[in-house]
Image 1: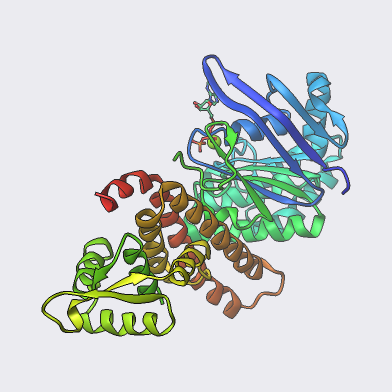
Image 2: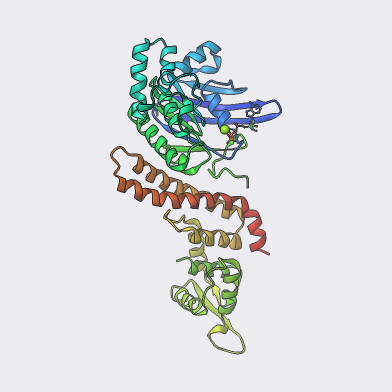
Length: 228
Length: 178
Ligand SMILES: Nc1ncnc2c1ncn2[C@@H]1O[C@H](COP(=O)(O)OP(=O)(O)OP(=O)(O)O)[C@@H](O)[C@H]1O
Ligand SMILES: [Mg+2]
């Protein structure tokens, strides 16, 4: 077996007296789609934040391409997030003052691309997700589903190695959610991007290649995610 | 068919008459579908022919409804195999799945029921993943998507049921074994 692209070993994280994760192991291979499921409060989002280097685990290690990113400086982790990772949350979290194209171009500009080129690439991705006609609209003028498509375009625009998606369709109706996920899955398969997909919904988890289920901060091997 | 296995499960606790079996069946299993006497006797006949049950005695007043039956060793093995098998994930399997949970609680314990529910969930998830992959595959036709959606919707409902039932196993056990 080749080394996983991204892995966590013994990840433990507490917020004051609350222990959110108590020793979680997870491996994600290059291009693999892994769902993280389980009931509300079981630690899914915390695990995603630890793996994405957004928060530092109290104990355990997160390894990305054979490097222990817990040992990196905040600046180095923030470069990693910018260059190699894409993130996608339940509510698109678009910058309200910017148009769709500007929002999607933002990660490219931060990485040092020129304006013209960034805009062109951004519009290409908006087109890929069926919203190129909204390129010059601000988020306030878009529906939730349209904003989420822009957010997917923004997560993919740098052609990241890993996309971290936390309930990406949680705010959409079933059909809109399915369309967004289908397009995301097709795009990541084409690009060979790995995905960590957080969801509490089995029909969404089914878009992934496999799933791990958390229960109360640990992996539940039964997959049911309910206390006996 | 799960009715035969439910009867085997009811006999696991000791010999019973056909009349008794009908009563116990209707009490423990979906109230909407009471079993007819005729079906009980026909099923017992087939189970006897296959060597899974054997007559174990008769009351004073004779007649077929007064013959009691017991589980044979081969019947006990058949029952055990059935409880260990996951059902083919297909729409509408829930009533067989439900029967299996109740019989597991009657003849074994809560852990057996939970183990079965977990195995069934894995089988359902595997099928759901296959259908979802077929639907998201580049070039899937609208017909493929619509057909997959039908099965996905039903499997998803089963999965939600499997999960909520898991939380109720302990309570259900109290009721089933009371
Ligand atoms: N920033 C924080 N401060 C304090 N407690 C937190 C914080 N983030 C998470 N927690 C706690 O950690 C536990 C796990 O939270 P987490 O957000 O990871 O759960 P989740 O599985 O994502 O839940 P949900 O499905 O509701 O989003 C919860 O008990 C939560 O209250
Ligand atoms: Mg969460």
